[in-house]
Image 1 (cartoon, one colour):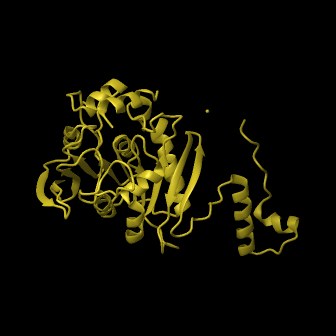
Image 2 (tube, rainbow, N blue to C red):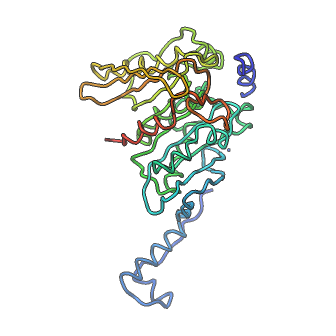
Image 3 (spheres, rainbow, N blue to C red):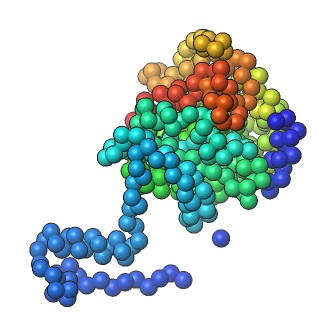
Length: 347
C-alpha cells in the first residue's frame, strides 16, 4: 500500500450499584442449610458463596493446542480477540505474549503471517491477539496518534491492559512474564502501552513502528511516519522497558529513521553509560541484517535493534500466508521470543 493510500485510510478513523448480599457467618451456615459442620466443609462452602456473590469464578482454561475466538467486555470498552494455548501446556504457568496487528490486518491474519503460534508450541508461551474493530478505525489501525490513546487508564491502552489481565486469568499465565509486541500501528501502540503499564509488561517488541514522542494529531503522526524532524519528549524519561526493535531499511510506509528514536528515548531515561555491540549476518535466503545491542554497565541489555537490509514494510521472517511479511528476513518472531523469555518483570 502506498503512503498516500495509508494516509487516506488512516484519516477515515476518526459507554446503580447492586445491593450487597447478606451472607450468614460461617458458623451459622451448617445449621441453616442442614449440612455437617467441619473446617474443611465450611471453607469449601464459604468459597462457593463468595464466588457466586462476586461473580469472579475463573473461566475454564482453553485446551492445549486451541486457538479460540472471543469478545472481551469491560468498563473501558469491548474488543474481539484470538487466544492461542500451546500444545502440551496443561498445568503450567506460562509466559504470555500480546500481539498487536497492523493496519488492514486481522488477528488471524497476523497470527498466520508471524507464525507465532507454531513457535508458541516449541517455546511454551500463550499468545493473545487483540483485534481492532472497524468501528474504531475503518482501516483497523490502532489509534496511537490520538492523545486519548497515549496514557494509562484511558482509551486503547486501558482496554488492551484489561484484556491482557483477562488473558492472564484465562490462560493461568505467569503474571511476571507478560510481553507486548506489534507491527506498524500495532508496534507503535505496543511501545505506548508498555510505557503506560510497566507494572504489567516485562518487555516490548516493535516492528516497523514509531517511538514515543510529542505526537498529538494525525498530521504529526504522518510526519513522524515519513521521517520528518519532530519534537521529541522533553526532559528526563522514566526507566524504559527492555525493547527489541526490527525495521527494514527499505520501508516506504514508516521511515527507517524511526528506529533510532528508541535509542534516543533510552538515552533520555539516563540509564548511565551504554555499551553498544554490533553484529552483521545474512539469512539463508540472502537477506543481510545488522544487529546492535545496548547494555548498561552491569551488562543488562536494554535495547536490541535489528536493521534488515532490503526489507520493506513487512514482518521479517514471516510467512506468505499472512499479509505484510518478508519471508527472506531473519525470524523476528523467534528473536522476539528469545529476547522476551530472558526477562521477567522486576527481574
